[in-house]
Amino acid sequence: MSKRVVLAGGTGFIGQYFERKFTEAGYDIAIISRQAPHINWNDRERILEAIDGAALVINLAGRSVNCRYNEKNKQEILNSRIDTTLIIGETIEKCKNPPPLWINSSTATIYRDAMDRPMTEDNGEEGGGFSVNVGKRWEETFFCFNLPSTRQAALRITIVLGKDGGVMPVYQNLVKFGLGGKQGSGDQMFSWVHIEDLYRIVRFIESREDLSGVFICGSPNPVQNKELMRLLRQTMGRNFGMPATEWMLKTGAVVIRTEPELILKSRWVLPSRLTRAGFVFSYPTLKLALEEINSSQMKNTHTA
Image (tube, rainbow, N blue to C red; front, side):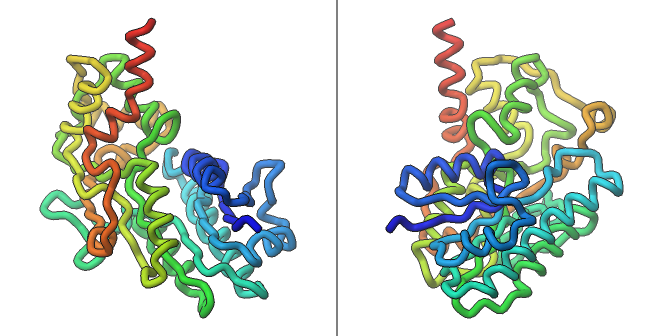
């Protein structure tokens, strides 16, 4: 029999990539989502059927943070993470054959705005504010379950880069329209991970029964924002990009209904636990990652 992977919140950018990769690896896939025809979050019976006997449960569910942080949106962002995590934990408690591993998304924004030094699982300092509180509440909920037969790992995920989704279309459009210069001071750190490495991290943790707890999922080589934008221009064949000042970003964020902290906050984290465990990144540098992501676009440009 094929092993089964349960992807909760599996219809987004990361979930679709994971579904394809796990299918290629020979797994059966069960997806829990609010979107038909997948298992609905309100259907506890079908959720139990999917999780009971599964080889792996991965929870990626959560409302997008790419919005204005008004009270309604903030409550939806928090509840979408807490409620889905509770449903999975309560379901695993009822399983006759509980999954040996439950991986839950978390966020690297749990750490403070860091310009002075990188944060790791060992020495990272938690920050304050809404985004940090979401991360803390999310992990508290995840680890509140006592599941003796199920190993648990929380992934503090950085910005995920990949083709045809996530943040890449936004950055690519900025460069295309001549707005690919530094954002704000350009000194803020940008921690990131290629989507293929995120999948490989999941498989690495799956293969290592000695690994559990919290893991930072980000490349070992974060860069400053100005270096991010330079490499984007370089890999997209553009020589110039207008910079965006902080006041421009704050004004523009209101217009496009998002939060400027998504660009201006300095995220500087290092994956110390994964590195110590022996994980090797396929895309350790941003140049390698962007060359892979933008390669198809460059081919289309040259053949047009």
